[in-house]
Image (tube, rainbow, N blue to C red; front, side):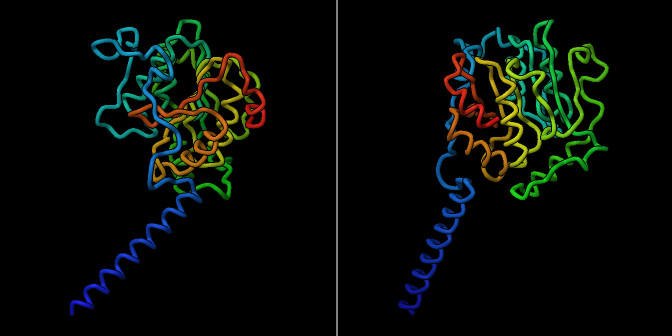
Amino acid sequence: MRVLAIANLMWLAIVVWLTSRLLRERAQRKQRNYFGNWPIRAVMPEAVDPLFAPGPFGPRCDTEVAFVGRGPYAVDGGTSDGEAWILAALAKNAHLLFEFGTCTGKTAYLWARNAPPDARVVTVTLAPNDRAEYKVDSDDDTRDVSYALRESNYTQFLYSGTEAESRIEQIFGDSKALDVSPWAGRCDVVFVDGSHAYSYVVSDSAKALQLVRPGGLVLWHDYNGPLHSPGVYRALNELGTRLPLVRISGTALAAYRRPIVDSEAAPLERLA
């Protein structure tokens, strides 16, 4: 009886070891990192922008913004209150801001409310009647595709009918087909928060790198581990091997500051 119990324990240990090995190998193939740290390192917000350097009481008064929080409500495509605060505060010194993925229009609204008077916000989304234009790639996770199509559900937005609307340029269309040349190299802040599908994150990221000016900032939403948005996780891990991406601690935001002296022009051209 004792010999049988020992044999069973040994068999169980072998099964656990084999399962763990298979998961690790699958994680390496898919860049999913079920074990260990995520590839993009975490930093505090002040490492992305000195505006966020805290004082003795936490965030300083110069990060105060006009704000609409999410609170306990489930909102389509919603950033957390902390993420929304970071995005709104970054608009305070920006004059041209570009967003992939309007969804409810909350980020566009916060940008327009908090940016200087001469600032412009450009945001792109797929209209509900144009879902057929969405271009699915064989590498795209079906969950990411379904979320993107579900959130392409708005033609009226949080900013609609507000004073902020006059400062927002709303574009309806598929971001893969979008020509970004009118704004190329001019944007202070670019936010990539459209489809989470791998092929779209790759496409939107390449265009974001075309859009951002030297010294400007690109942010991505939903870098939140392998189970939340696998397409975002995979695409940004790949991009992070070529550019110094960071993720903002306590958020699902990843960020890249384009150098003022653009020694990385060649990689940017290859990615665009």
